[in-house]
Length: 137
Image (tube, rainbow, N blue to C red):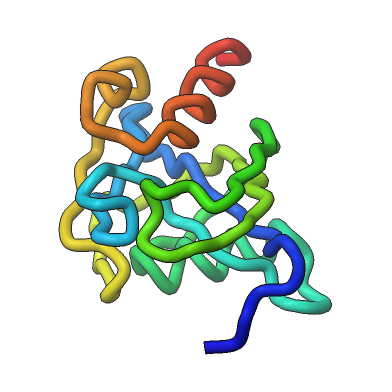
């Protein structure tokens, strides 16, 4: 594995269905805590394009109505499965489907109202993103 020499730019998505529920994924990358779909922005790729690509790769869902929520810094947090320095850009978006097809990055998923999600075992970055979203909702 190539040694990281600079922070990675990543995107994350609060994906909402028609019922106003958000999609959470339980992932081994966060030691069994819930997180949201997302990943790295590729060189030459717009963040919105990266977000749509990552959501599709991880869940099979197509999303629209992408809106910025917040950014966060992640520097070698022991909660994550590997040593990494990332800058997260989190967004909300909408999907018409509830049919999720997970890839290898998550073990299970749940559709849940955002306030109720705060009661689940979620990673601290997701907690902040949901709270920021609820401020503007």
